[in-house]
Length: 453
Image (cartoon, rainbow, N blue to C red; front, side):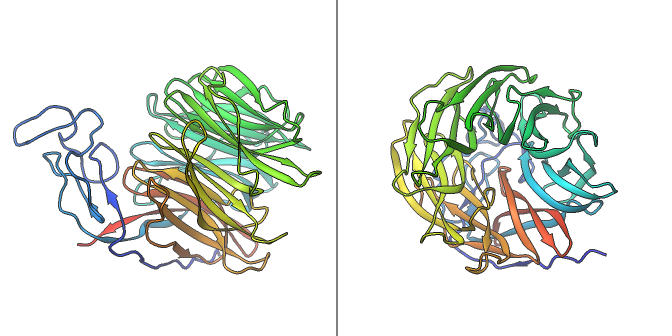
């Protein structure tokens, strides 16, 4: 019988938890007529179709939007667990989990994860999908996405609001790397293309996918050229165009790409390493929906020797970037940083301290923009020992890159790794892997500001 995880939530930042709610359909209170752009009986005002509240939002606490579209009373509350944690893999015995991907649909979460399944025998690499409510309750039956004949080593997914479906990227395990496969999943996570659309790269790793206004964008590492590739895909998963990024760079190793959608298309971030010269840097580029470079490729933080993990998030005007540095040579624990840039790669806020992660744990930190703040989730080490266990940690930053309150940690029995993160309009949905004894589980938890009664 599996052990039950012991979760301890410590409320911090009472009076520093900032959460202002924009009234719209989805998580939070039941939407009324507020935000429909029409001033109706009983309303003093209304807004356009964004559904945002009007008036002064200078609240250092928590408040809802009134029925008349004005801000309600300002309250202060703590940041903590809104619901969960919930084990998503009770029906599966897993040797390990290689990736997790969490996305918000407007009414529930979709969680896609790739695993090495031990039970039922024989052991295979596969991908599973689970839908989760805002109360962290599993909705429907968790299911395997692709048949056993497809050995899945990595996954990523994103929800597309205009169709209600998910765009999904899979790396099929081979002896040396992965074959790239794209698919569309219906609202319940079942594939709509059998078996999927093959990508233009025969041997790939480290794939991510994003949903833009008119297309999907994906980035991955081409193992044949050791370069990063961007691909634009139509909503029906027809590959429109693919371009190799930085192919003339003298640095030989390109890895760990991430992608964010923006108003003109997409932005990409990736690492470039030259082990012979002992140097490392981040590269950043913006691309159109047709895979054209909007501006040149910028080199970032070459003087700091940035290390994985890294991630990219787009705001309404700037970009947030997280990356790590080593505090001393060959340190087993790396320092995580958040920096802000404008679209032209001009620094808007220098790197600020954002936590700690283990060395060589390339997927142990993720970044998201909520509309009012940055959220960073990480699997943070408990000691300086390279074999130490990790627990789930969360930090929040203002649009200017200033930390809000202090780090929030959740005490979990087992070793936490590879968290993923999404924003639902009211709180953060987080999935992550936990290694316990001889098996690994995938769990889901919802974190956010908790108003005082």
